Length: 469
Image (cartoon, rainbow, N blue to C red):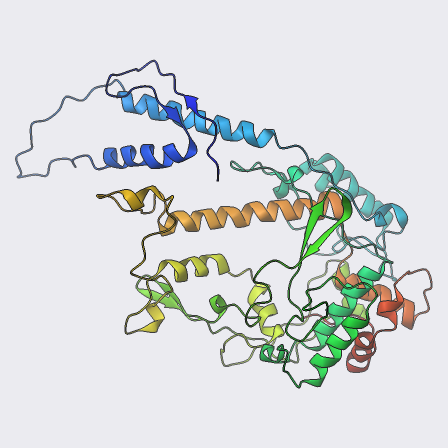
């Protein structure tokens, strides 16, 4: 990362020992951190029974270092804030579904009251829209709810992050329109994920003989518009259910669908999900509590409608009595169900040296390697090492936690204040009414309506609704 432009420090506490300097982000980390670290190593108070060294008089005036450091911190923060403010507000194109459908069938309305067809009550939708336009917490308190489920943290997205840009400066391409072939292709993939959630993830490899996996890849390859990862221009078992990234491209309002480097490398399950996590004198097992295959939800219409309205689930998950490693898509769903600390665990694994007689306490860090990147100022220090203040594990974990929080603010801001795209299970409700009840004004694409995935799901669950874990 390039340094910020240099700023001369102006202090009214000038001292020959502390000349005026130019400050950059790197010089602050490299110089000031070491200086402050030295200041922290001051002599402790004298202990009873021990003759103290010659005491230095205590002055009420701040030392020159104190004033310089205080002013330097202000300058660095000011430059960062100024640089962030120069980044313009990003364009926020939508897919047009909210304006296109007055009954809001292409929009996310979960938790609001709905009629028997599952269409949101207009007064409730208008109240939500008003709150999202104003951002006023008082307006959100006026949004009618259909059940006990509350909206998840919409005004939390308006919290000002003390570092980095804010969500209005981040562009997220719109979701595919409700009636589009791309949206139909996404639905086909999601229905196949539902059907294959108990297939071992080891079957998602190019030499698999699993007939269901092969049927899924064959159908996805026939779709008119499928944006998922491919190998050699085709969906294969090894690319099935892997992730693409949709980047905003000013030249293309639909964005650019890109498979990032490394996404198709190796098995689908990350090694960070299969390794025990060393945690100082403790360790955390990689084995998890898994849900039984009998756990399928929202395949009954009344249950589906109740959840759309924000009612609490009446049925509880049933778990396997034996913990085990993540093996299936259902296991992955259970792992993320309660918001796992994956970043925290990965940091512990990466920061702990490998080796040792007990693998529970062994990480991936090569003991012979120098700490971190060459830009780490401690790599050149002969007397100091990083710790919790800077560049040590607690510091990295703090950055991870802040990054997770800030990214959630950005994505939830898009969710509430920009896109409000229909959720997959609500899309399944539209399919139910279209095919089971003859509702002709729900414009779903034939890619989905005539798909093998939908036919198989209907045969398995007796409904066109999308089964949930």
